[in-house]
Amino acid sequence: MPLVNSALLNDHEFPASMKNWLFNRASNGIEQIVNWSGDEPILVPIIDDQPQNPAANMPEASGSESSKRALRKRRDTNLKRIITYGTFDLLHHGHINLLRRAKERGDYLIVALSTDEFNWNEKQIKCYFTYKQRKHLLEAIRYVDLVVPETCWEQKKTDMHKYYIDTFVICDDWEGKFDFLWDEGVEVVYLPRTPEISTTQIKHNLSKA
Image (cartoon, rainbow, N blue to C red; front, side, top):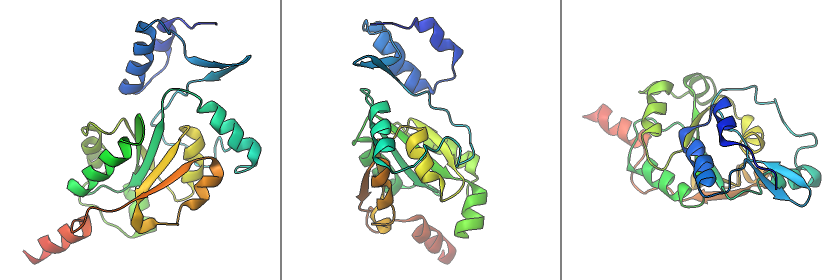
């Protein structure tokens, strides 16, 4: 089986947790960045956190059986990837519960964090903390491996392919709204909210204080 020298990994910018995973595999004598299935190499994806055009890299005929098979094949690694979406303003224990339960479903958790512009233009939400501040808070949480920007509603389909997602997780007040992602070959999970806590409720209580 062809192997890749681990020194070559330094040519790429990996998130720290992904780089550790790759080097741990190397230290265990499995120095490679491909999984082998028959005669065809399956690349372990390089994940970055740079915003891109949501329409870019969209597989042709998305949702077709061929694109779903290709996506599952690219996911044929030992790393199960989870993604969730949200604003995560005024971070509270309900957010932590969601992130913990999402991470329990896999190995690598990506949080698509709504940008300030997206929140204001599409959701009419004015955040207390800026996107940069919210991103720093999320990156400090042990369950979170990568934070990427959410800039539009349409990027969810693209993200499933861009980040080789296995499971999409979101709170159950969105139940049924994202079932279309099953057509992208992704498991869709709606988790119950932590009762009696929300950013909206916190803001309401503070305004009355």
